[in-house]
Amino acid sequence: MNYNYKDKNKNTFKTWVLMAIFLGVVVGIGWFFSIYFNSPTILYFAIGFSLLMNFFSYWFSDKIVLKISGAKLLQKNDNFELYGIVQNLSQRARLPMPKIYTINDSSPNAFATGRNAKNSAVAVTTGLLNILDKNELEGVVAHELSHIGNKDILLSTVVVVLVGFVALISDMFIRSAIWGSMSKNNENNNSGSVLFIIGLVLAIFSPIAVSLIQLAISRKREFIADSSGAFLTNNPRGLADALTKISENSIPLKKANKATAHMFIANPFKGKNIGKIFMTHPPLEERIKNLLR
Image (cartoon, rainbow, N blue to C red; front, side, top):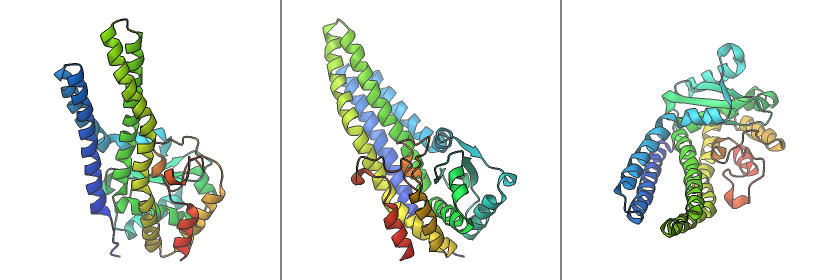
């Protein structure tokens, strides 16, 4: 079967663009503070740090995602049915078989991660395994394999590290401002005021920016993975029924995290978003209608 992945080259390009933007932003912040504090060392540190973070996000972000999600590696003897489904669909899709992980959580959900097809992983919750039959589970696995084939996984996994950095740098500025305000030196107080303003702006706008980034890379790719997965199994009803069961379950994921939310097949917060505009996933009802149509 000659399985066609639609957006793999586009997603590779988006990944490098995102990493380049991250590099530019961090270097820009470093340049500002090197001028403000008259210390070229800050700029050198910012360049080195941004390069290190890009390297780290490319090589290790998938391991971070699996770790913070509480995923455990699955062996063939642990679940013959799941292992066989992943193996058969991987062969049909002409993809290397990914590692399989399970998450001990009653909320039904799943995600794929990894830097490329040869170093990929599929994780499913125990809650998902408990409520789906074989056809429905095939639909979910095919959806996640489509993310791997389309090279969505590198883009979405790198975002996890960069999103985490946005929160970290915001917190760093605010803490620096507090430290500066405690100083009796007037120059330090002025520095603290500037840091506080920057930290406040980041604290207000970073969650919005993060949501918009996740939205931009998530909504369309979910529809594409749905259709690609249905094509792979030749059974759109299987995935549609799986999404229906997931939508009927109101249990949020225990380790739901804003940085990783966009990676899952369905919103892990179960409707706790601010509003529809900031949802990282298209409504399940729309996806089900598309599959059945």
